[in-house]
Length: 60
Image 1 (cartoon, rainbow, N blue to C red):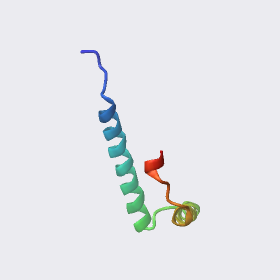
Image 2: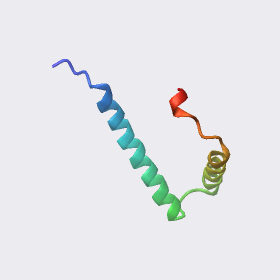
Image 3: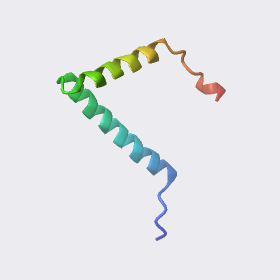
Image 4: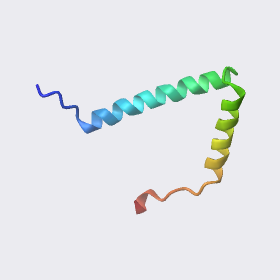
């Protein structure tokens, strides 16, 4: 066996890890365990995402 991991499997693994990290962050945030500066940063990023234009995926 040559040890090559298929691209689709790598993407699926990375996606699973990202989703788990986001779930932990959201749970900590809901419980009020995040530092105030982190909470402010998250709110700022969320505000920017709401006002940013939606990219057109078909054009890419």
